[in-house]
Image (cartoon, rainbow, N blue to C red; front, side):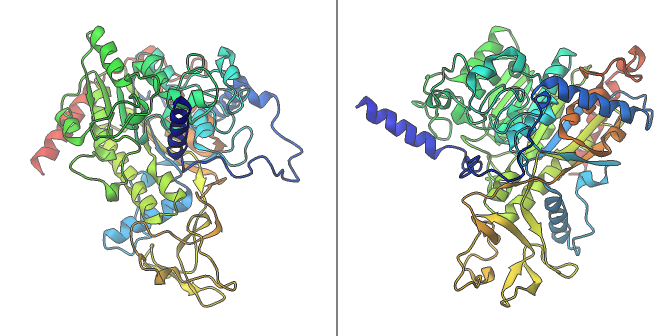
Length: 548
């Protein structure tokens, strides 16, 4: 009987595994003929990447002197938001506004500085969201599938991840050590790869709850699961704002959540209750919320600590969400800023539009572009809440996708429709397609079917055409765009390693760990009062209320 129960639990776990990022079929089995040269031993150390980032900072210091200090630093991350995704999303936005489309702009595309970041991992040409999160949040490149550890830790190497010499600190930890407050916001599970980069150290991004560590034959007391790390270890336990999905990783598998979904924890611990008990024991005001009504009730006066888990799994896609129960990314961003901005020393906030990536993996181009527009709305709201000379805002992506914006479509053509040209068999094709993924259709005698003849053509979940058939579309190895606004925005121009990003942000905010005595970080500048910022938010709120 017991063995049968174990088998059932294993099958459930497999079914609930991250279908968007499965272990690639044959990964590592076929070696590229040109892979004789791999990463150097130095690249597996943190110091290599710290030195690389410091060289980048030193080069940029001479470009333009800026005496301002970024009291607040915000990173907006569009997961999988490739450059073609940006171009297509702005076109969709413009067409929704009744324009031809191509001339439109996403909110952050007007930022004064734009750069490009290289996204490869230490051991992979094309990255996943774990090694990239380690780069843009910890400032060090590492191995595919690992989080918050150096390149000395290979995927699934629990013992190596226990070595403190291999463990990294994130920009969130740097901010906390400098008296700032920290928050993380995402439309994915809060234990998913991107947000986890702010607080977790693990040899496998998929070890989100204790059962997954045990399935890998490791002891969760030695290699704690990601949810446990968020609630019980630094820096996660000190985050003032935690908003996203993924309730199932925090509650027992014998317990149903507020929406009737079972938890996944096999240790029978309720980490949500443990979070509340910790805050109550220290007389800290706190609230756990799980729906939009509760979030809006706390909007004007958030508690000191706020934990919001709005779905058992990821948040719903914006186009499919129940707007009465599920908050938008813009609303999540606003309450985070209102909460964190009460700290006179400022804050670091990470905001992720994570479902751009998921839609791309399914070749759901309409959903991917809409989620990109939702991220743009959240950025715009943050710009309205915080003065430009007080806050550095950086918008970027972790990696690209293999979405192609192709054909010779005329100006103003429906971005979700057909190209003006046809293939060599006179078959129509979409302006947006993919080089691989589940959207591949079976060819008959070498002729591709016309996707516009399908019964669900035009639906939200109508898959764009793909070439190579895969259960899940892959990431791309392209460079990703970096947009910056606020103090020291000029530091983000050019082409650079993705691992430089958190160091550049912390440099602007005078809490970097590798720079020595940056010229703008003297006492007079560092003690700038946030009073004007608070007044600015109050005025914006009053104006918005009057003109609703």
